[in-house]
Length: 323
Image (cartoon, rainbow, N blue to C red):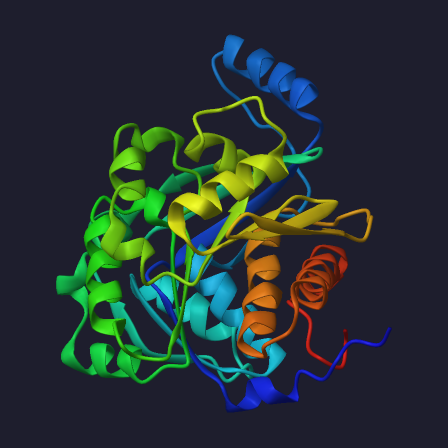
């Protein structure tokens, strides 16, 4: 079946917040081999581990999501903070995409990540910078007007934002009664301890959230590592939040709501990169939500966007023509 048209995205305005990271992506051998090499170097008091070319790029969940949506044709604005170097890299990395950067503020320090891609895993060493304390007070009156007039608002990376729950509460309150689609991706919460339960208990947030994107590790963390199958856990969490749980893995995805679930297999591929794959998947998924597609078409689009991104030699999210 051919993919339906994405042309309707051109009429959609989306706001993504609150994180930008300056990413340095390092490709390593499989972890056991890389670890042994680093151990030997450390035992000798230091030295160099030679690696392939290191890629510097604009990163962060909100930035990756915003860039991918802009490449798909939507009108997208990013709200974030970084330093002068990060702002330059952001502008160069997203040039020509139409991504709106008016609400990216320049601060003294910026978030940075060293992403170690090793085999089928990636280990990210991150300094959160201003993302660590990005509460609703960081949003200007102009930013709030932009949010309130959007067709969709995507608030991501709660895990690295100690004021993330306050930000989500404020967004839910300001979006109450408005037609905007409210999408959340909390990222890996395992270091947040009891904050996870506090977030799940914040009913005022979940009453307004339309869809929550998670990968398998994040779903396990929010369900206390229960041994039930992942689709079962997704259905259970959807009942608790009364919204879509959109679970993605590398080879399949499930969309669950009100006790019902749809399972879609993904494309198998040999990835050239791992960092940002989940954000590309979220872009396709959110696009499908906004276009009113059924869950099977929506999840299939999400898989296709992610697959094209991880296999692209250009390291760019795909355009509709490339899909």
